[in-house]
Image 1 (cartoon, helix red, strand yellow):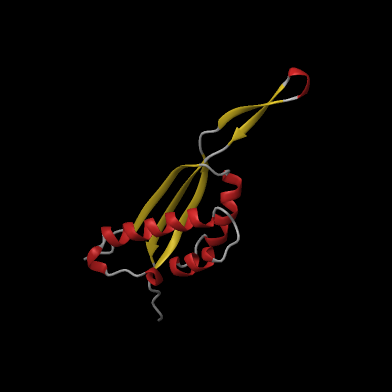
Image 2 (cartoon, rainbow, N blue to C red):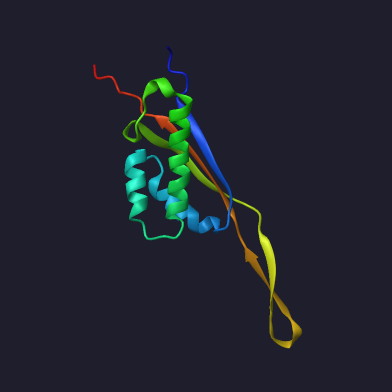
Length: 124
């Protein structure tokens, strides 16, 4: 059987956290081994770390389900691509002095993760 693009994706949409804050966590694990990334996220002191870990676990489960005959483990997989896009913004109003109103933007984001199987490098 030819190696036909062994990768899978997982997407978390409408996460009610600011994309700027989620990107800090996503940048920390980009390109890493899945097992190492999950361990790093376990000890990351950010509120978005469990959310990013959940999406990575989902992508790893998706590739295992897609290629059941390959017997893939977290050590065999790496995060090929992870990015955070801006989602819908909820606009709210806060009363301000003298009858004015200030706008509050409650931001949301979408997390996209692609995991792939590591390619064994041939030594000549």
